Image (cartoon, rainbow, N blue to C red; front, top):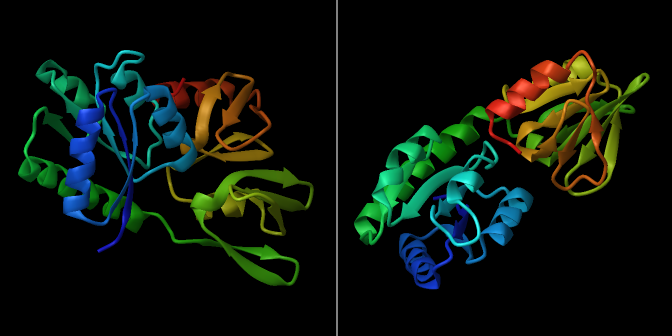
Length: 234
């Protein structure tokens, strides 16, 4: 069985302890817990875990606000004592809604459902794309791409791990190789991964892990703003 990265956010330490114990019992789940919601959300943006366990009513922030900003690749399970939020949970495409206090068997069913979704997403995402560099071909995983920039007769691919590679493959060709719905052309010279967007306007976009603003082309601005606003990114 594969290993899955998880983040749990809850301002009640006892609730986090229960999730931690259940994850250990289930196995193959690498969990990090946060009792300060904003720190937890920062970790989600930086780490992009496979699965997020999220409380809703917390002292410093509404869990629904965090849920609306989750990267598309994160599966979500709500863990809350307030059953009235169940409909909100499913409107946000949560995998499941665990009503506290929940037993282990209910937790197990929810996580099993989440893993099925995670594996389905992985199956749809190519392991790597192949681009031309000098006189050879280079493989790069879509998850390693921070952004892509056109440079006259070359294309520069910036990596999430730092550095970049210069390719002779055109922007148009690279765009066709990328997973559908995961990347967006925002300028004639820029392509970005959607799940790294943390702030946006009709003029520029900010990406997690990127120190510079990505410009938005005038002809792309309205469509891009609608696309990102529909994803509830703010």
